[in-house]
Image (cartoon, rainbow, N blue to C red):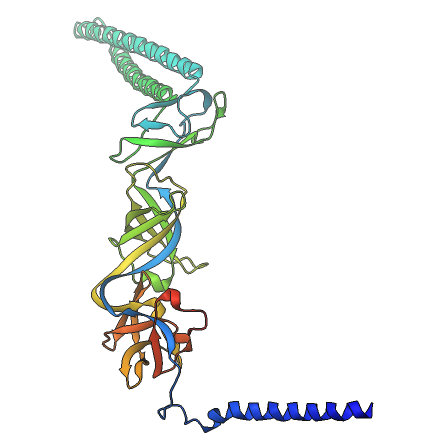
Amino acid sequence: MKKLALPLIVIIVAASALWVWNQNGEDAPTTSAPARGAGAEQRAVAVTTAAVESRDMQERVRFTGSLVAASRVEIAPRVTGRLDRIYVDIGDTVRKGDLLARLDTDVFEQELQQSRAELAVARASLAEAEASLEAARRALNRTRELRSQRVASQSELEAAETEVQAQAARLELARSQIQQREAALAGAQIRFSYTELRANWHGDDTERLVAERFADEGSILQANNPILALVEPDPLRAVVFVTERDYARLQPGQDVTLAAEAYPGELFTGTVSRLAPEFRETSRQARVEISVPNSDLRLRPGMFVETSIRISRLDGATAVPLDALVERDGAPGVFLVVDGENGPTGRFVAVGVGVQADNWVEIRSPALEGQVVTLGHHLLSDGGRVRVVDPDELDTRGAR
């Protein structure tokens, strides 16, 4: 055992010495290399680049909201009655003046007949009053003649005059009753006309869609309780709510692009039409309405939409891809590819940014031109060497 232990100790000591020598040999270049920035050869970082471009850009803000009908009218009876017939249902198209529903008319027909009969009685009473007045006037004239001949007394003359006045008053009463009965008949006719519910609304549109139905045939309806809701499908109105920061940048007439989940990948156009003059206290947001043309009726009230509102347009803006932006010491900037002594290098340039649109960002300052690093700058330092490669050549370490 002692003979085997001695050679084993010698082998271990020799291996340890060899390992220490290798470690010192590897570290030697590092300890003897000149400091960074003093001309040392640095390894080039593989990057991808893109050109600084002059682009026409649009600044947009985005909101989500819902589509609502530009106009909605609820059809309701003006009188209480039983719903006898309903001629339309949800989704039907109706034109202005179309008959939509009808109430049972029995009660209203009876009221109409009674009003006509009462008017006839009043007219008969008027005829009787006119005849009585004429008779009283003739009697008065005879009494006056007899009085002039001293045949009739003064009291008889006064009685004849009083009778004429009384018959004249009866005639006026009969005439008033005629007007009263005519008004009652007109009211009965109006109430009878209320048994027909027709499509009626304000506006120039001639057609609308039935959006809701609230009652069925046979239901007892109370006055002013709706049975149908009609909506105007073209144009629609998109309603979004915006914060104070965005509200100040919106105004009527701005162009809007809309996307609906029902039509993925398709865009619709609209225009900002109204801005509410106040903010809701609970949310600190204001209502904004967008007019959306819908001549093909593909969009429907209640759909969820994403809106993009153009608030400004820039022509010929200096722009770089959004991927080129990096942050160093809390300031945004880009790595500009420039020629160095040992080849291309990445020079960090702090920039002032502006509008962001379509994965591009406006560079407001300073003036830039050339190529900027878009991928690989996370491994790059100011003045570091770069090697421009195609994107598919760049691995996750930024170098090959």
